[in-house]
Image (cartoon, rainbow, N blue to C red):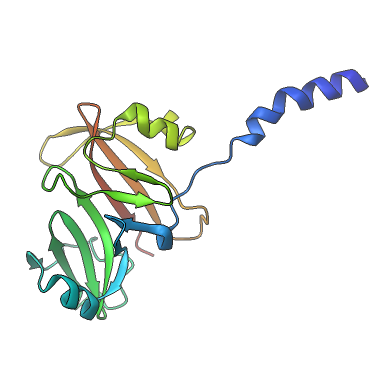
Length: 175
């Protein structure tokens, strides 16, 4: 009986030793410089002005404090939700801007990131690759990474096309 118990413990250790990987909002950056949340005044001081500002469609303002006045701000392939004087990251499209990257701790992702290299950073999450078709008919492989705290109302969507990272989106759920 004791030997069986010890064998079960030994074989289960590798399973428990692989901790799930998460993306912590406050640790992530664009090009190691741009925070995912920043005041509009800081953005304007640093980058002068946005490439464009648009009115969001229904469902694109989830997580906003003031849905009626929220706007989408675009800057060099990065989309932010402008709400209550703050910018909150929504997505980065590497097909529009190849010299941008998304960084977390000592890791980073850009248009050169392959599915295989991504799997090394997020092994468990990469086991659940799903086929995804965008509204425009484009097809992607998609990996979803949930936050460590499941009570938070967002998830990270990584889209791959032709085995390369195409874009990253942070999707917020509406309450």
